[in-house]
Length: 108
Image (tube, rainbow, N blue to C red; front, top):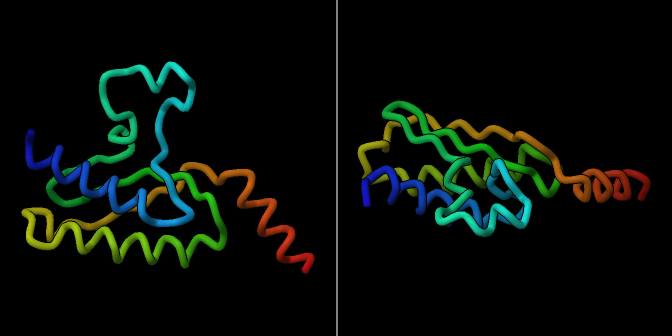
């Protein structure tokens, strides 16, 4: 286990605990569940100056859920060599259910 691998696992655990977000993985097919590694790790890139996480939004509005995520992720970086790294959250997709829920709320 490397420090980057440990950090990736910790970051994914935080994302899993944030309602409204999930890691954006390259495969959601049944085949993806049979590979011998955690596909969610492919959504995380840890470099010296930036930690990038690709996400799928399950709820709207985005600013509130992304602010919660950023604060929680910063806490994970504290005490590590990445404590000064920027966190870049990239929403690669929005789940259709989020759009349906947002549309229903607007119609009231």
